Image (tube, rainbow, N blue to C red):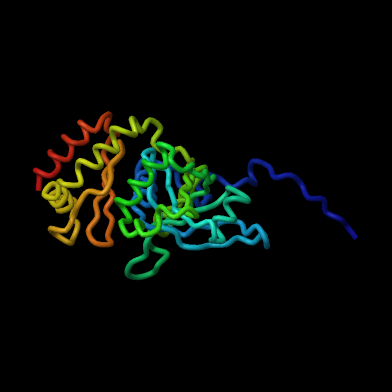
Length: 258
């Protein structure tokens, strides 16, 4: 009997770039990835169960910190909180389905490292307000002593923009490297809550429905968050805004071009 010895693959045997399922990650893919993550009010969270070791998935409300990092508010009694305390590695799945085949709609899986946010810290106070702006009903339990915020810092991501549109992203593609002053942007987010006319004008400019019901619920140097009822609309600037003043001028210009 002849035994054939496995040989290491040669360059001729290796799949060419054109044969892989991944496309080159371009700015369009990065933009879609950021919109999916920053425009989500909830995502699926997967952690490792500390007892069984099996992956465990659940749905969580999500927001974003000033640097675009996803944040979650969880109870110490929940299984996923115990999982994060035991092993900070986790994954988020974002992307809504629509008509037709669910797999034809964009979605993204983000591998993250969870960082618990200490209470009464400036970071906690900032995240608390940003989270409440997006999820006002969370006011009922957000200050319970057994509820905590976690920042889920992206490490890598797998984006599927629909059939034949798969991309691999680095964690840095989803993070704002220089987010600016937290105090200034927090004050700006507070100030624009009253600009309902501008919010509705901008929403109309972006082709959104629910006319007359939109309001601003957050801002950062990369974009604006608007909400109408339970619908969140994320709008990304073409380039990062260097200051809240520049973002304010952007809102004025956009709202006047309907």
